Image 1 (cartoon, rainbow, N blue to C red):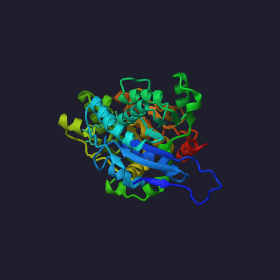
Image 2 (image 1 turned 60 degrees about the vertical axis):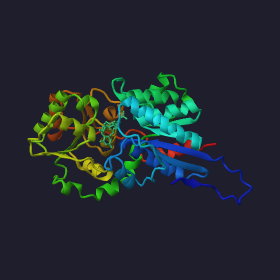
Image 3 (image 1 turned 180 degrees about the vertical axis):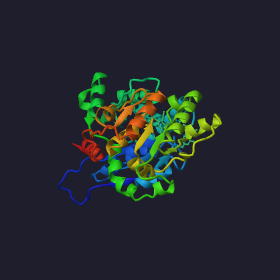
Image 4 (image 1 turned 120 degrees about the horizontal axis):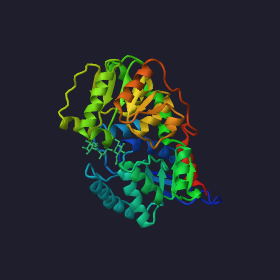
Length: 378
Ligand code: UD1
């Protein structure tokens, strides 16, 4: 379904703005929360047509479909159906299939989101065809090139024409890398737009009672980064630590497919009774769980941001973060892969000693509107 909005053709006196034909590309779970506010904001603009392309990088219903439904996203106009594969194969498949879409639709502009393989693949196709690209969530850097996402960020930002940054550090990184200032727009955090819009709906969910969790008396864990889960020894160390922590505070751990696979490979058996491993949750249930958690343990990028917005203490099991504002301004602490550090910080939080945090500038629910205004400006 394509959303087409045109001004009335019966008003000859006012010169119509040129038609802007935009294609949005998404592929994996964290993209869906980012595209929704931009599409919504653009759907209010005259002379804009929009199409949504899903690469199919994430394909399970609980990693994709439930998000489309809960976020109110339209059905994708095109699904490239690439599925899982090695990075090279996945990226190449997206490029081959997306090139055909671009050649057929000839968009004026393609918007890509975040830092996943779909982001860099689509941007590269457009750069080669001379189609302009906008990158939403530009400029973030972990300075760790062993992370696949860091490579995706660096390359996408070098070839994008519009770079929309969520925080001031993004502007600084891009300027240092030689990106012309005129291309860089500090618009704020689109992920937070979605959170602000849907928090009231999340508050209506009965997810705590469904999982038997006491209000404000539980912790929430999510881990799926290759650096944590692909090494069996590291994964076992993490699982033992979570089991130990769950003796002091009940933990719920919605398991990403990558992590589930690694646990199955390792024939992992759960011993503790207060650590619940559950399937991935939809957006609203997960947001409700974050909102009421006493603490969150994660290696996700988006969750570092959402907990900062919610004022919930976040312990990030990584040595670095591409979202430093969550540490300097927000509620995030990097504990690295040191499990004794993680346990120490958990106990400090349970003792009532935790960062209060503040909201970074422009994390106000209006980033999508700022992007739309920039794109349609004459
Ligand atoms: C991808 C992104 C990562 C993002 C994450 C969010 C890249 C390089 N990584 O990592 O930045 O944080 O998504 O979830 O783009 N699988 C399923 N069903 C699915 C999707 C994946 O079973 O719907 C399984 C497959 O076995 C696959 C594995 O999960 O091999 C990993 O999926 P993949 O999309 O390759 O990377 P993610 O680890 O999800």
